[in-house]
Amino acid sequence: MIHLNVNGQVQPLEVTPDTPLLYVLRDHLKLNGAKFGCGMGQCGACTVLVDGRPVFSCLFPVSSVGSREVRTLESLGTAERPGPLQQAFIDHQAVQCGYCIAGMIMRAQALLEQIAHPTEQEIREHMAPNLCRCGTHMRILAAIRQVAAQGKLLAANPVREHA
Image (cartoon, rainbow, N blue to C red; front, side, top):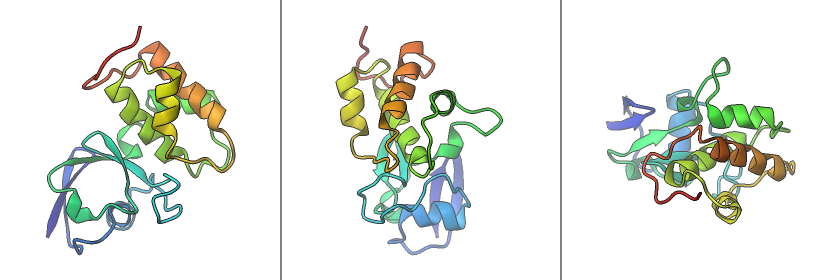
């Protein structure tokens, strides 16, 4: 039996230790925000946060989680009450097919929790591992800049803040 802390709730699970976290989230916990994209950690559609750090859940064995907290898109808001990043993505029409968006939002969430007001270069470097095949990168970046500028997402443990 494995116990995972997912979105603030401890979940007991009967899974093999080498099961990818993505499969546990989707198949066992019915948290479908993270998507299966490539299965090789090259696209980022499956990005979730483990102790505030973005990970490709398709490559991350559930045994590697241990007692650390896992956060998924579902922890940020709902369709009726989207969180600040989710709302910014809506405002900027950053979604075309939508497949990459959960991973993009989770990666951006990790950045803004570490650096409340990142520079353009920091945003671009941090977001680089996640791909949008539809080409909405500029709108995605604009959504992240909006949240950073408005200070709607306070850095949980800011490394530093830019003025």
